[in-house]
Length: 277
Image (tube, rainbow, N blue to C red; front, side, top):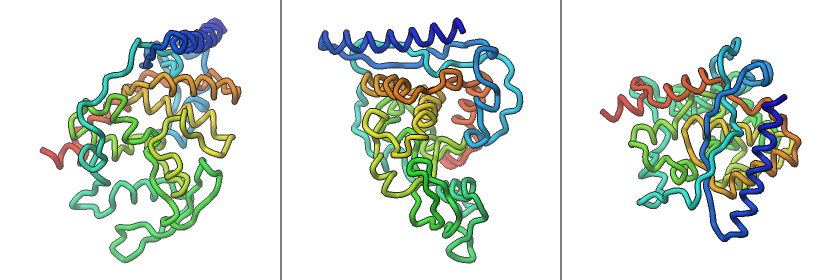
């Protein structure tokens, strides 16, 4: 309970800092403290890591947890990339290997389909039919043509919040990461277009039931990849957290899982690395 009270105080403090910053004509940006907390004050393992979030079953959570809501504020604007963002130049496209004609899009569609998929031809490279639930619209889609793969934290946002400093292999990995089931998500095409490269201060899914999970997932991806947040982005998350009465206890991530996820982002056996040597 002490932690929950402290966390709530921190959220209110962030709002106060925001009001002061606006009044003073200043700006700030936010990074994650990665402060560890005791497991006995958070939710159960099932709540912390529901099966749809991570590819590996969570099992029993042992050791410390990382709070997703403990942030550090920095005066001024975050560093601006020296080069303007360009999708193709910086992140490339979906990758495949010589031994597997299926690209990352196809693998995500196969992974997330609620039933067996069919393909456009006998080579089985391109997915044609399946059944995908779009949590943004809360609707199901049977044709792969209706579905786009959303980078949960969009590529441009990642580039401008720290990804510009990555080498090309890590940029490729971010664009094609399947180490968990939240980084890349099948959603209806027009809804993905509506989101574009917006953070929660510019877009939230029309499915209000998904609001708390949406900002939780956003914070998980940002934490794994050590990306910053703008003041507007952080304030929107605080506001949405309060408006939707989100549960504080599930805004955590086991420290061991965070370490595992980060190790996957630099997996030297991944095609992003082996194909660029």
